[in-house]
Image 1: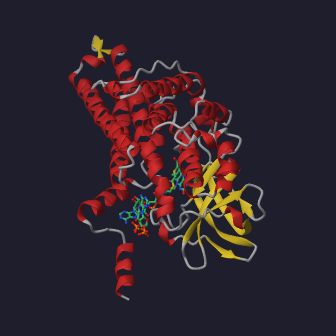
Image 2 (image 1 turned 135 degrees about the horizontal axis):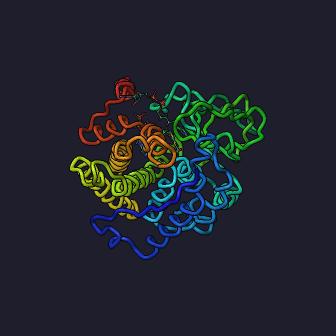
Image 3 (image 1 turned 120 degrees about the vertical axis):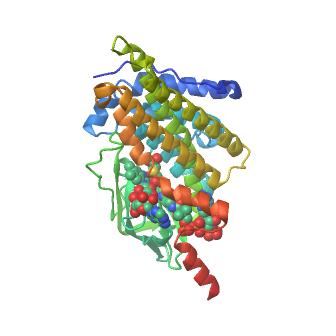
Length: 404
Ligand code: TGC
Ligand code: FAD
């Protein structure tokens, strides 16, 4: 059943005063688009476990594909806070739709823009910005998720082309993608990004079924069986694990805003419901325990907004560190999930139905807390930054390598 979207965003600390007119304009335009195009259809697509592909055109039109990519390559040329606000509004609609925008912008356009040749930028970026091409990003493998540095996908130099072998798993949009940015090792074990195009012989992208989370997003594998890759498809300007991790910084930053969108939607719905629903002759909003829940939700949203705004400001100045981004992604996804669970309680039995967005957000956030680095990996990234000691096993391997 199509739900009427009455969303009003909480702004308890008057943070709008920190935004420029352009940033507010971007947010309003994105919110209007989400209310008109996403909210009326999302529950149906979620139930069918289908990506609403017709939204791609609209996402491109509002500038959600490459918001911060320069206009000369088809991007919107916006600042980082505008990008964040866009992710917030889109995820307020649904995390899966935000995933499509994040992957296209930060995981496909970003590496081509930052690490690609001029020819690659001209060839791919405008088509990705306009939505003519859908992209995906292949880092995770069946046996290497949190630890991508041990990946086994590899390519060999065959003289006039490369030969790519291996498999990637859990890849957002892989079944519908025209291009994939794939991370693989060369003969010396150095990681490079390769642009793989749909239709290349030996390349398949089967869909993953049975997800109870991100159901309106298409997820799949990438399988490479002796795929011939033209040499001009290698991203020449950066190699090593730092290359894909640099893209993740951008996507993780977007998620710290996106998760806030989901949290705000749950809070907004819970507040409205608690004022309308009467038990024991009074609105349930009048009970102290409901007020505790709502007050704590708003407090966490406000703290999350401050984190997101500050990290956005630092990114605009090119001063944000990866660990600062980890803190914001980790915190904002965690609070969003907690808020979704509390909002579900406030809605009572109605909270489990698709008349309200709560369960959908809650199930989506179970993916968001795992992808782009799990909750615990971000904790350990922070731990390493604070102490100077990495808790990852790779640390011992590196120490040993340094001793040899
Ligand atoms: P480590 O030794 O720490 O680093 C290796 C090299 O990378 C550099 N580096 C970074 N560079 C840029 N940005 C970052 N965030 C960076 N973090 C590290 C580092 O300086 C080093 O460079 P160099 O030159 O010294 O070699 O590497 P490690 O192997 O110990 O692992 C570190 C760890 C565990 C933090 C990393 O592997 C990690 O983040 N793992 C999590 C994997 C992950 O996040 N996967 C995400 C897959 S994509 C996805 O989920 C998309 S979902 C999309 C959607 O639908 O929205
Ligand atoms: P594992 O790495 O096996 O982790 C399992 C558990 O062990 C976690 O709790 C983890 O925190 C814990 N753990 C692992 N190592 C440590 C450690 N050193 N210390 C303490 N605990 C540890 N990947 C892509 O490349 N591209 C995509 O587009 C993409 N989209 C995705 C979409 C969805 C819906 C999902 C669910 C995932 C997607 N991923 C994608 C993959 C995602 O990034 C991985 O799932 C994630 O990085 C975790 O890897 P894993 O699932 O293999 O878990």
